[in-house]
Every structure is written in structure tokens, then in C-alpha cells.
Length: 119
Image (cartoon, rainbow, N blue to C red):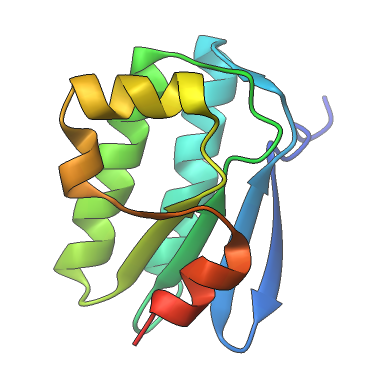
């Protein structure tokens, strides 16, 4: 059996891992688990992890995916890194606001703004 296809695309922007999602709907349990594993691997392999996660193009996000983001945030924080979220569509951001996750995560409209906010 071949290895599972990656669920994220990662590019390096001056030492910052910029992550975007392959799928437009992040609701399947197996996909969410794989995304979590891939993101945590990025965090764990960096001395001081710095990530920008871009939600541009994501149309649906399950509550399980929010749990993965919280785990990634906690791991980044425990390793003295930085995490930024950007490009969150209005409908999904409303869920962040209702659940008060907009207070936990630092968010920006664009990748460029997220990169500028890292210091």
C-alpha cells in the first residue's frame, strides 16, 4: 500500500513554514488526523517552530479540525514558537468568534500580513 497523499502544502518563507490545505472541506476524520500529524511533525522538527496556516479556499471546517488547531497551537507555544492563521473565510471565522478561538489565535487577512506580524 502506498503512503497517503499529503493533506497540506508547505513552503518556506524566510524560515517560516507557510501551510495551505489541499482539501476545500476539512471534515473527514482521517483527513483531519493526517493534517494534525503533518502539522505536529513540522512543529517538532523545527528548533523554534514558526508557522502561518492559510485557510484561503477552505469552505468547511469541522469541530475536530478546530481541536487539531488547538493542539498545534499548544505544541508551538510549548516550544517557544509562533503560529499565525490567515485567510479565514467569514463563515468559518464566525465559528472562531463564537467559540472564542479568535482570542487564542492571532489571525490576519493575508499571508503577507501574517508574516509581517511575526517578530
